[in-house]
Image 1 (cartoon, one colour):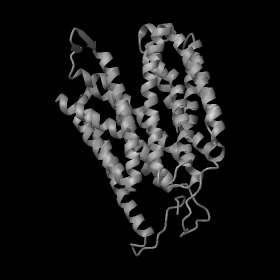
Image 2 (spheres, one colour):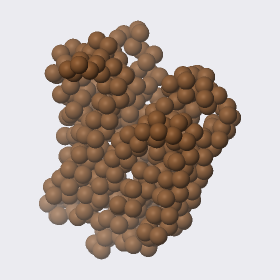
Image 3 (cartoon, helix red, strand yellow):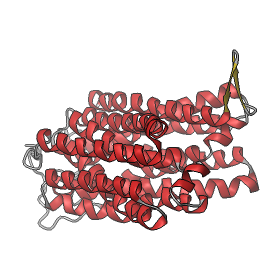
Image 4 (cartoon, one colour):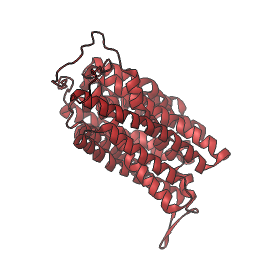
Length: 415
């Protein structure tokens, strides 16, 4: 997982540079963009992924992983160079479309590889480690992208980011093996043989609901309202000795802290799910903690709100890791790609619609009520996870002969 994680981190620097510096009107002017166009630039790649995640999921089920991952890294680096060369909106918008597709290729591929090389005993640990690398990549790229922009300027920083993508390509070229042939189905007695298995849509939709809820809440609502939430407790900035830390600086720093907290939570929850062999039970507990955290964030007391933000940040990465592990446990290996494609399409959908809904409702009902309504969505996901926990327990009893009912798995699930 280390080459994959380092490569993802190197590939993200160009994308993160845009998020870090383009909202600055002076830098947007250097790129020949209005602030309205900047909003489109920053959101276009995520919209594209709503289409390309599923496409690459299907492709990964039919093709080897390595060459698609290499192609994704190469094209992603080319998109970063397009940002640097653009003198107006046309080229950078094309680059954002290309980046959305290339990130789908890399991220869906990384999750598929994680399922290829893991088994029932360590799947949570492996998927948790992948999520840890992802959040580490987000935090690290956010840090270095700002440093590069200050050091070399907007375009110079992007050219350097493109060069680092080339380093990521070389890293994968030499150290990333083909894993499609590694995957093996578990050697257990088959109770029922389905002659024409179908893709398990309903099961996957249930598995995707927690990711959709957390994409909407964490990547959508919380990220979009981060500075507004902090402004409730900090009036213009924070005085530390002789220095005044401005609100915008504190907002960026707090966002990085939340990402790092997610980095810690992902591997811990993955390992715990392997040890207890209760993935849906841990998922339900994580969603209940996220529900409590979101509700606490809506409170006017700083201590309660800050504690809630820490709680929901810790469990977010683990929920993603558990979703991937559940797919590996229950879905046939021939559908790993399209299953992970569906998972992350729904997470991207939640993250895409979260900001406009939140920012549109805040003037009407206020930030606290927006957070409380978001808590209701997490509550629905938690209830669904509790239901799946009971189903998980029942399936385990059927497999071990503790229940007098003939086991009949859904088509497409591992028998």
